[in-house]
Image 1 (spheres, rainbow, N blue to C red):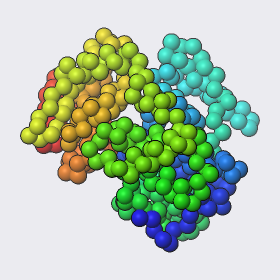
Image 2 (image 1 turned 120 degrees about the horizontal axis):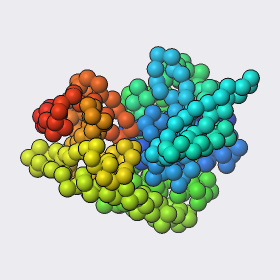
Image 3 (image 1 turned 90 degrees about the vertical axis):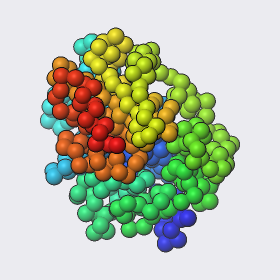
Length: 373
């Protein structure tokens, strides 16, 4: 249920001219489309809004036009950076040229052909916001210290939208809908009550994307009837379900399909521990022709197809002497075990673990699995 002391979401967007929507990384397939919907609403009323997220933007969400996304890596300097919404596998090299009052940035394709990109998204990167919306359960480490302090001291107004009380309350007030399966579903119900006409077809499409992704196209066992009611309402508001499903589940490059096949052939699942695991070798990348950026998409496919797994681990070779593991888990004990490992960090939905050098990738994977059981 929504916090009765919280301001209306629509009024908050109306009253603040430059809004930063901070999307929680751990549920990015829900929070990023939900944040995109809020950007659309801000633009309706003539305001400016951008999306900040620490993890990468999944390429399958590009159809929503994620050019509003900026990035900042929370650090001691709180230095902002500009994120370009693009499939990382299409970028070979980034270079720049300084001028008196601007910087031209150039992107090169993997084959060396230069892609001129000085017409970058007009994202603000100076963090001069007068309003912040925390979309989902945003972790403290996902927000620069200077922004957290501005919110805490009341210099920037802030609001949180969650489906449960936030782990760390970053905003003074929250809109909490514990009956919702996803933030996108919660926002749908809030807007339906506050300002129904704000749900245009573009807003509805963004919200339905988050709702479908969060419920695994309504196949997740925890999906509630309320989610189906919200989806039907959004389709009635002309959300483009056909386009959403085609991009989320259907459009896969042949190189990804080949790599997925190699991973499935080696996939192993232990029902006693509910841990599934597989590997991607340098040879798998070479035979499939897939870029290394596809590894995260393969793990996402595992997550979507093995919902019963408590932990999913994908060990990936990086050159001759290096390897990493991509780990997905929503399990508290596994998350704590990963937090104790050196050289481990969260990347959006997944954990990235640097594996110690071992002549055998299987041996390195075996040691990691022993820690997660």
